[in-house]
Length: 91
Image (cartoon, rainbow, N blue to C red; front, side, top):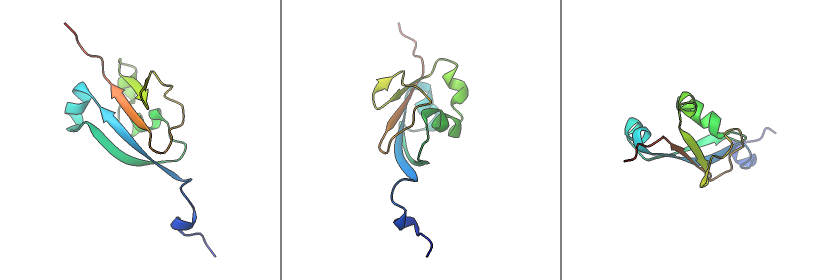
């Protein structure tokens, strides 16, 4: 008998929240986006999905669950918050 989605457990998808600040918040028109990703996804996968990977090389930093500078290739967990932090101009 084939497995139905409910029989597979929660090992195939994770729920994450993407937080956006500064110019990225303006670009997307919101400060947060909740979404489901495949298990094993990373911050870099998330950045690529929203075409932010080029921004990572242009000064945008990543924070995962409040840790600024978290490795972009580390696997995300169910319930993770991933913040994309553009450089800000201070005065």
